[in-house]
Image (tube, rainbow, N blue to C red; front, side, top):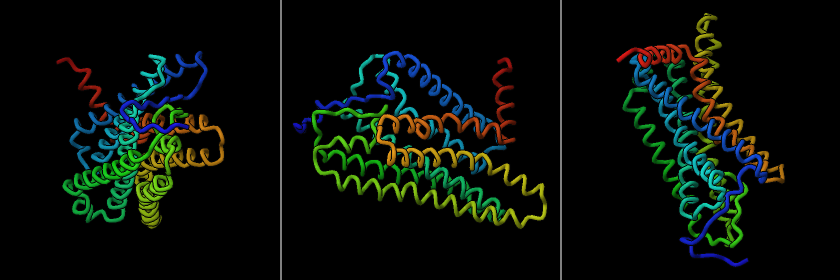
Length: 312
């Protein structure tokens, strides 16, 4: 194949989830609905937390940041997909594709860090309640988020710069609905060993370390809960942590599912369909999980709805 070095003229073709032209209107409607539900649900979470002074705590600060990150995460992929379906043009420029890769890595790695911070917050609140105001004071919470964001940006830039050194062939079909890093690297004509090694090393750090932190935090939480004499206290702790555990299980469960399917399923198109779970469905379900399982959030939503329904 002929290699291409003129990146300003380079274009990729996003093949999407199906080649069937009759399914495209259905896919467009489905993903537009999921996108709007995700935006609305996460915005309501943010507004409810901002409007209720009782929710101005570290736990809900991290939750509102997670909701904002979910909005950004899904916005990096779905709008371009909808544009491609609407215009019946699968092409995406090299610059846009690389920007999508970079944005996806930033918000994906930040999601890992935020879930780990929320687990640590619950650990501090349950296992060290007297020291909790000192351990999780507002300045530390903001600093944790900023450091995580900085690390995520550095992580994404390293991968993006590593892609910039690659030369690409003329046959640039991506069997996905967005520019995924691993799929883009597969299309390169030049040596990709360093890029693949970087993926494994960086994924271990930015996904494995936060996940291990979550596991360790909940081991301590469960150990502390089992020592509680009151069954009411145990129920309160588990109801508080239940929402976060559901979100963690959904995010990491679907992520690992996609990784396993890519290893054992030969069809890359089926892997793209599976990736919808962690890149779209998880962000859409997060607001429902937190609002349905959290009494404080239900009360905040009730107050917000009463305020919005009241005459000006």
